[in-house]
Every structure is written in C-alpha cells, then in structure tokens.
Length: 283
Image: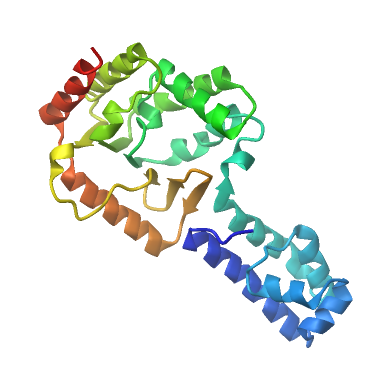
C-alpha cells in the first residue's frame, strides 16, 4: 500500500504503529519474539511498527494477545480504522455505486454552518443542475467502472443540495474561470448550468467568486478541488482517492490557500459578466 499524500492519514497510521511498539516493549518482547508468537515473519512486525503496512483487525488482535494486552484491542481497532478512513480510494467509496456516497455526506452537511469550496475543474456539487450532475456523474461512473446508479445518485445529490436554500448556513464558493468553459454534457446542459449560477448568486447565503484568466501573476497556482467544513475538516479530491484533512496544521494551510484564492476572485457584476460571456460562447 502506498503512503498517503495526506500527512493527516500518515500521522494517524504512525500513531497506531507507535502504540503497538510500546505494547510490545511493555511486554518485554523483541520483534522476533512477537513474530514467533503471532506466527508471522519478523519483517512483518517491522513493517507494521514503521507504519509501512497497515495492520488488519486480525493482526491487531494477535499482537495484543501475544503481548498480554487484550484490553487494548478495541481502541486500537478503532484508531486503525480511523487512520485508513482518512485516505480512501474512489473505487472503494464507489463500489456499490454513487448514490450511497452522495447520501453519506448528509450528516456532515447538516452539522456544518460554514462551507468553503474551491473548484478548479467542475461546478461545485451544491450548485449543480440535474442535467449537469447527470452528465458529470455518468462520466465518473464510466471512468471508475462503478455500478451504474446515476439516476439515483443525481436525485441524492440534488436532495443534499437543498441545504443551500435553508437558513443558518453560509456558502463561500470559488471557481476558476476555466470551470465556466469546460463543457460537461451538451451545450444546452452547460447553458442551463450557467443560468442556474446567475440565479443562485442572488441567495444571501451564497458568495460565488470567479478567479478570472486576467488575474495576472499568481502567487498561488491552480490547486486540486477541496472543501472546508467549518474549521474542523476538509476533503481533497484526487483522481484516485478522497483525502480527509483533520490535522490543525493542514487545515490552516488549506484555509490560507482559500483566503488567497478569494482575493484573486471577482464577485457580483464582474462574476456575472464572466458567467454571461461563457454562456454566450456556447453559441
């Protein structure tokens, strides 16, 4: 298993590995001695203790039993599963289709009061029309080879997106101007999506900024899509996986990036003009 690009995930794995090493040392066992009791190679013990190989639930049970620390098993299993949840491949998240994945975000959305989203490739999910979402989720399903439940997934995404119209929340959304030009679906789909952006900008809870091509020399390059939920959690979308950010130092870095991107963006009439120009270019 490759090391996660998220230091949050790797730090969580290393914390589990350190606890396992302490348990072994407290039991007075060498790496070889533990391996013999568990019935595996000494190299496996080393890989687990150095966070190169994530232990399975069975590995954790065997480790703790061998060290006379069965009371540690539940906490270690929970900590290990949490570490693995910070970096999850899309093929795992989408193995039963996209509907359940869309629905899985609902509790997070319901408890979040401040949403900050930066998108460099597509329109943010909470602002997507049915036709745009169908075209996008259809492409994702085909590319990743996920079960085809696009229609149900679109329904789930739109149901989740109604939260934009509810009170008590603020949505600060940033898109690169290129996002307005990337055609997802046919021209009619894009025209409808751009028109929807113009309409939804009137909501008092929504702040939509567009980072124009004319922003000039940029100190911060175009980044991967990321979403900040209040100040405690972020999702980063990679081609192959979703990374969950929780470490304060990483959260601070993404918040700083969002702040810098916000200063590059235009809002109100200027943003409307860019959206209108993109719509006009569809012919």
